[in-house]
Length: 403
Image (cartoon, rainbow, N blue to C red; front, side, top):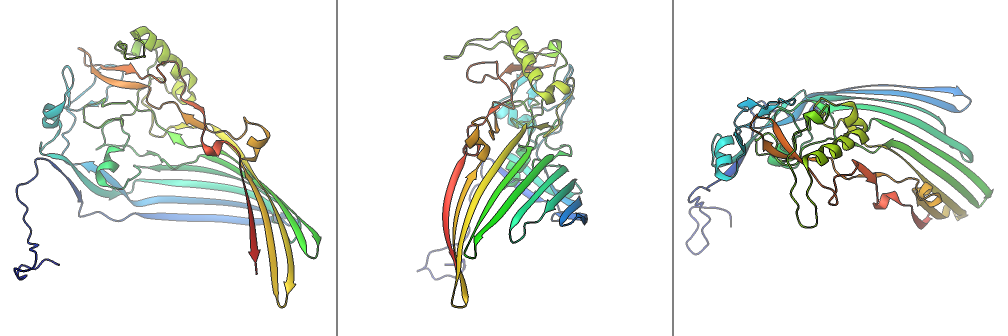
């Protein structure tokens, strides 16, 4: 029944009874000036026949955000100091003089109101934009014969953040240097910087009642972008796994604590960690070029992967009365190159993007770390060859009746 304070006593009562307030709670609010996402977009494209039926196309799309979504935690106290050492980023009150606080002490230190876990405010602003340019040349497929296409797309996209389903998770997921209330506009999660695609089709008519179409599609692209962050809470703001990593210039800037043995994993000394982390930096193209800097959000690119798909389609058709009837037999092989060679078309998966675990600070106010283990080892690379379903060839067969 809907709420009605005059509901007869014979019906259940739905009068609100808030009782005592919860001991802790979170708040999600929106600024009065908030505007739903809006963009300015301009497009310029040219199609030009260059030879017989060969067409060249050039297109540029420019997008600038007019209003985009941002979040901040209104209940988070501001940073009170900076770390010492090579990475002098802001340090929040949750990082005490001897290390990271915990429990009630941590909550009281970082929250303006200790009973409020977070108060996430949504706002909007002109955060980010993109430029995408495509060049394509093609010979369109006709009723029969050869058709082909090849195209290259370059994309540069920057944004503030990638909002999630709720305010709290959206704010927590921001990767930042100065804390999530002060993120930087940087490379978008969804940017694919370079992509080349190509397609070849050939159609043969065997008779007035049958035709065969063969098609090969291929693409080469960056698999995506990623960021290097610390595991744990490096800066004392009680947000874990979001602090972008500083890349030491050399081993002198590495400040490690020993790793104790745990279960089947052996202990590791400070020097063993320095040697292993130095090797990890050197094997990664992005890290090795950015020594002495804090990494950018999504600054690193996964390697290129090349995949091809092959299809064959047989059409059997005839006219019955006034209608054309077609039986279509089709076979598709996805990641066709992997059928030919097991090394072809295999992408990449991460070993880790968090090689270091935050371990507090030392007596000089310099952050300390321990190197994270992968399979009980410190000797690993950023990525490895993938083992998912899309890394192996797959086939499907189908039949279709069209009338």
